[in-house]
Image (cartoon, rainbow, N blue to C red; front, side):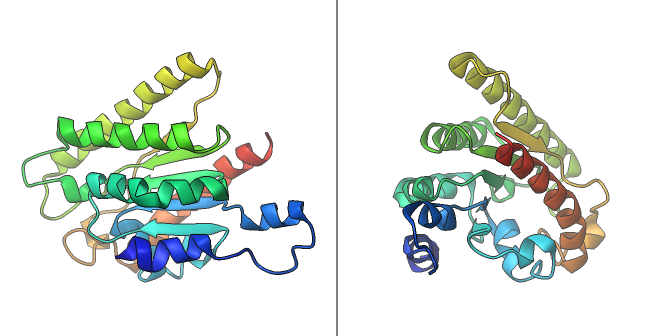
Length: 225
């Protein structure tokens, strides 16, 4: 599978040469941004490869997107060892895009899906460094799912982010939030789809413009700490 054949070997590979000191070795092995989720992330390697995000290389970006993944599949992968491996790389930012494969015609994300997403966020918060930021990105429009279902799902995810931050701020007594929300760009319409769900090249360019800006903003915040 993708975890064992692609992701694990990349994360377990030694850092690049010219690491004369322990400190430089640690710096070279740190990941800036992890893209975690489904095919919308994975396709930054293909359809979205000409975007700024798609042009970034490891260890600036580690793409942990897998086509077809649902929320529960991502939970399975991090339990399989992905999260343990990521912990050693001390990522500054994790960007999440997952949930569209849990949708069904006429049905928004259900309680069990949101509960799974909550477990995912808690696992990232508890395992990774307290300096690691998390960006939850909203789901995109699809031709086979009512737009109202997409809207309701994004509202539920946004509320989950707020709830998680309130819990964490009480728990850690920290004034700032570690989990952030980003709406899908409003100018991405059905005309920006390759099929019923996947963005085409133009769609990725629009998403990239917003996503890259948000990533840089959060990385700048992380670097200033």
